Structure formats: structure tokens, C-alpha cells
Length: 348
Image (cartoon, helix red, strand yellow):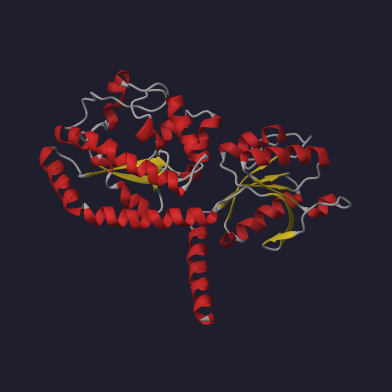
């Protein structure tokens, strides 16, 4: 019994470390300070990649002049703007600050859900309410930890795997028929691989059935005036680049079925905000990056509640509402409503 438990833990830890080494599921770290202590911590985080940290950038210490080094983002005043822009999970203070300033940062960390740590050697004589914890061999004092529903997220991932496998196996004859129809209808590949932006800004290749002619990307400027959405995303019901067969696929959202392979790979979830393309993300305002805090989904709250609403603000608002009120039960309700939306043929 004991041997089995130990073996299971070793195996799970091995695969977890492998994911960390590939940059998957890691915690993005930002370091306040640019002195020797800061650089020593950065080097240490790089050496212990198996513990799941990815160093992003430095921010100049309070009162210090922002440096022009490639790894220094800016001044302390921009700390939480940079934390949002770079999807920071944890902030390390390696430069001494007044306790009042740390308290303000603590309040912001709570609002942003960012973890906060300080290096204890820099704060001799100040009593902190928490004991020293080691990040690798580096001593730190954790001041704030954002709440992560680990068990619920594990259940969500388990559901994603089971639901995707079941869907792919059940609909495999449909997938084959769609592939044949696309091949007979127009020249070009059956699948369209599009680079999308996933959780924390990671790029992945989203798989869809091809619904446009081969030169669709090069003709995007020609159809820009047809956009029926306000703001960033592009959507046109009468897009001339769409093929005959694929108008039916889009109507019933069948073109998105291959994305369940993305779900199996962990790049997407069954439910979540839709994954945007890079050109859209470059136009996002800082607060709109919030929708990239979670794994993107095949369907989501916007798909079942605001699909016909052209407003991008409404689009983002529904995604943020989903993120802030997420639960397994909410996912189930969205999936059930998605069946109704698909069968009614309201896709575009």
C-alpha cells in the first residue's frame, strides 16, 4: 500500500516536472529590485525550473530610477500594470521598502489575486505574521497568497478529458463525413490551424475545420468593412471567403468540433472564454487581458448568452463574469445551453 502511494506520487511528480521544464503550468514571477539580491534570486529561479517558476522581468525598486536594461520593465509606479500585462502570479520584493508601502502593495495583491513575498534579510527587526518559507534554497516570507481552487480545477481537467474523448469517439463518423465534404467542395486542407492566444498569453495552434477559401488570410483587408462586431474581433455573416459547405458547418458550429483535440492536449477547456488571435490581443486594453487569466474554451458564457451582441465590451464583460463566478456547476449549465444553441442553428 505504502509503496504504491509513493510510486504514484513519484510518477505524478515526474510528469509535473516535465511540464514545468517545457514552460507549462508554471508560475510567472516578477522581481522588485535590480540589485545583487534580485539577480541572485532570478538565477536561482532559473536553476529550479522543476519547481514551476518562470522569471518574467524586474521592476525598479521604490524611489529608484527605472533602468534601460532589457529585463527591467519600468518604475515601481507601474508594478501592477506590468503584473497584469505579463500575467504575473507572484511578486518577490528584493529591495527594502517602508512597511506602509508594502501594506499598499499587499492590498493591491489581494485585489489582483497575485502572491506576494519578501526577502527576510532586508527587513531585519520587523516582525512579520508568517514564518520563513524557502523557494528552492532562497528564504522568503509569504505575505499574500491568491486563492486557487486546486481540487475544483483538477475536476474540471478530468471532466475535459472524459468529455472530449467521448465526443470525439461518438462523433467520429460525423467528423469523417465533414472531412470528405470539405475535400470535395473546395481546394485546400481539411483542417485550418490558427495561432491563438491561450492562458497567460501562451500561443497555441487551434484546430478547426476549414470554412474559408485557401487565400482567406491574404484577403482579410478586402472584407474589413463587413465587420459586424464593435471593437476588436472580426465577424461577418456574409463573408465572401466562406465556402458553400462551410456555411452549414458554421451555422451549427460543426467547424469547431476538432477543438476537442486541443482540449485533450490541455491547450483548451470545454468551457471558457474563446481564444483570440494575436492581432486582437495587441489591441486589448489592460483590463481586457483579464480574459486570458484562464484556459480558453470551446464554448462559453458569451456563446450561450450574448452571441448576437456586437459589443466587444459585452463580450469581455461576460468572460470576466464567467471567470469571477466560475464553478463546475456553471460549466454544466453552459454545456447544456450550448446544445440548444447548436441545434437551433444560430452559429455564424
